[in-house]
Image (tube, rainbow, N blue to C red):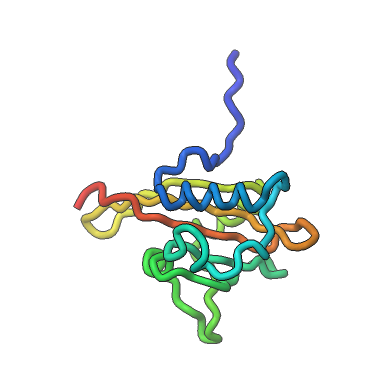
Length: 152
């Protein structure tokens, strides 16, 4: 009997050039450590694919609070601030992806196909876990890059 390979969501299947560049930045920022430090991020505008990024902080209650959002990411995700002016991740599938990135403690990649009326949109999502000074995951850097309209 052949044993199936372990399940995983590898960052080696990324198609979007901007997310390949972001993944290379992450690997350089983390060096020999398992996580890149959150301090390496600074302002999103200094990172590859800046317009396609979101930075979330993991709150003590397990919720995800956006600290920075690039304009293309905001448009694609259709996120809106709550009544208190803060933007939280509320989409169930996205929360599952963020949870997986935390539990795996390594880059998480998935290709998304979304129906938007008569069109089928395809894009790449890359979630990169970031560590605090103690090496604990405290933030997640999210990149989403539009690939194509598969049917329009």
